[in-house]
Each structure stands twice: as C-alpha cells, then as structure tokens.
Length: 359
Image (cartoon, rainbow, N blue to C red; front, top):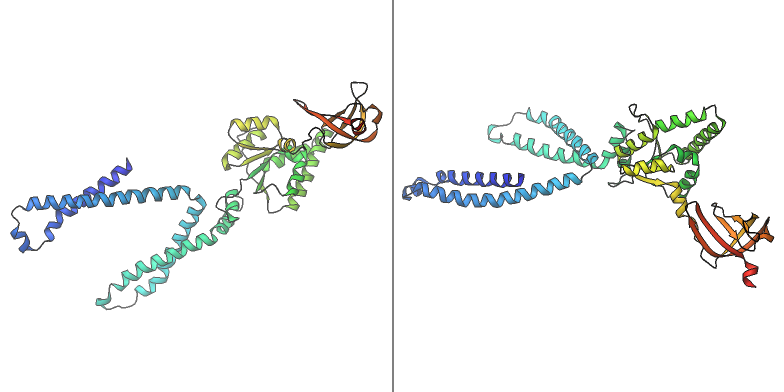
C-alpha cells in the first residue's frame, strides 16, 4: 500500500509540474498555440510518465533503505544518531562567529552556503566518530548493559550471551569447560543466582551449606581467571517468584542462551523457545566411543551378577562388565571390548580379558 502511495504521489506531482510548466513558455510561443489546454494536458501526461519513473526509483530506494535500517543493530543506529546531533551542534557553534562578520550584499549567498556545507561536513564527522568510538561510548553510559558490552567487543554479530544457572555452578564441571576455552561470549551471572548460592551457603542443613560454599568458591575462581568474560548483572524480577522462572525470563529478554544441567529447567526453557546448553549433554557427547576390538585398561573392583563376571568403571562412570573377570577383582587388567549397550540408565560396555581373547 505504501509503495503505491509513493508512486501515485510522484505521478501527481509530475503531472502538476508539467501542467503548470506551460506558463514558462515565451509569450511568442504561446501566441502560436491554438489549444492551450490540450498543450497543458500533453505536457502533464509526459511529466506524469517521468514522475512514474522517478516514483519507481524512489520506491525502490525506500525499500532498500528500510531493509538496511532493519538489519542495522539498534546500538549502531543510536550511536550514529548521537554523533549526528553532536556534529550539528558543533557546526552551529563553529559557524556562529562567521555569520556575525560583515559581508557585502553581493556575497550574501556565502552565509547559507557555508551553513549548508558546514552542517554536512560536521554531520559526516559526527557519524564517523560514532562508528569509531560509539561502542566505547555505550559501555561508558551503561556499563551493566549486556548488549553494550557485547557491541564494545567490536563485532556486529557478537557471540550469544550465556546465562549461568545455580546448578551448573555447584556442579563444578563448568570450571573445566571454561579452562578449555570452548565457551565464548559474555557469561552473565544474575544477582538472584548469587543470592540463591548465598542462601544455600547459610543454610542449617549441612549438605546444602557445603553445596552453596562449593558454588561460591567455584564462582570466585572462574571470575578471577576470566574477569573480562564473567559479568555479574544486578537484574532482578521481584514480581517473578522462582529463580528458574527469572532465568527463563532473562534469557528471553536478552535473547541469550541458558547454561544449566537442570533437566526440568531445560524442558521448561525449551517450551518457551530459549536456547539451552546442558552440561550433562556435553559430557554425554564427549564420552569416548569404544568399538568391538578396542582395548581398555581398567580396574575390576567387584564381582558381577554372574559368577564369572567382574565389574569396573571408566573415569566418566560408564560401567564395564568383564566376562571371565572374576579372577581379576581388585586388580588392573587390559580387556577387549566385545559390545556396548545404551540404556535409559546410561551406557554399559561388555568386554573380555585380553588373555582369554588371545587364547
């Protein structure tokens, strides 16, 4: 609808200009015209066709400009607007003394010309300055804004912000993930998560108190090791009762990714279209894949259900059932994988001692 309005306006404007342009013809030419109204209609028709072409160009240009603005981050638009305003203010301040100078009447056109040129130059300089230092400006005026911090890194498409859950901090494995360097982007720890950790650390229950203090210790270590990446955000939602609901709301608000190992929270977040990174899923995916014939060095710690079986465990907790492993209980043994079974409770590997396989 808007496109049609733009084109129609240009056609009407072109026709009107063509209709009135007949008046600009010399009187000698107009005296030779027998039907002045017909001439006006013809010129209006040709001008309307030209207006149609100009309208199509204007409509195409408008749509391109609209698409470019929609694809431009709001931070860039904001900083450029501020730069433009500052540039125009500086232009007025710098050119004001010049306007007070006495200029002869024949050179009176110099003042508006200098005003136009000065405004254009200073506006361009202001926008260029905003593109160069606008990200730092946003970080200064709003240091707690995750968006401004991400933009200040210098990327138009920054890595998604990660929101750290209480369960993920207490679990402890997040510290090793940080040390590997695979987590990129800013890591947000909301104030209400810190409050939950403090409540656990101050609990009367010994188990909760240990978990809370463990979480605070882990958080202190990763904050000291990665001070530029860890951000403590003071955001809180007093009208939302639970911490899980606050985490989901924050993730939706900043379009962030929730980092957790809470199964129920992951399900709720997925229902609300929140991106999830689950530490348990990562650990499951990183478990080594053992194929039949692969050797494993393992300590057999107990006897299995069958009299001849021995049971051992890998470092990730995977249970290994060793056929004919009863004689190796309490000792290290090299076994050969025969098969693997994935169950709802986890993965099981079946193997035999290498000596029996060789025999």
